[in-house]
Amino acid sequence: MLMGDVLKTSQQVGIFLGVKSVKLFWYFSGNVQEQIFQMLLYWSTHCDPQEVTVDTLRAALVDAESFAALKRLSLHE
Image (tube, rainbow, N blue to C red; front, side, top):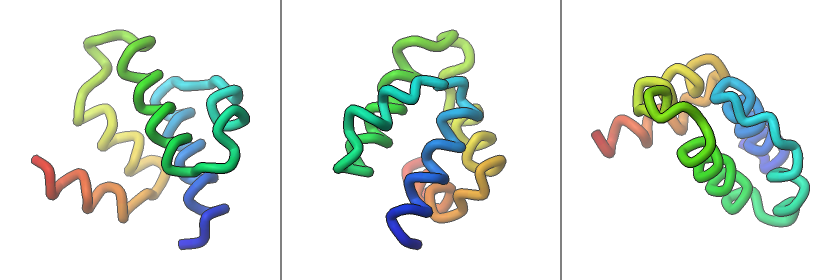
């Protein structure tokens, strides 16, 4: 997967998780891994704690068709 595709997919996951802050992606535009980390950090600290679950993350990854990330997620369960 190309970096542009990874970034687009991570932005879609962020939208599905309720992270609508474009600033996260703009501030860390040179580092896709950092963008994804910051998005997940923001989600875990600013969203409803009852929604910050592995199941919610899994659903967002499915909706964004991020199958590689889903595979990695299942390795850590």
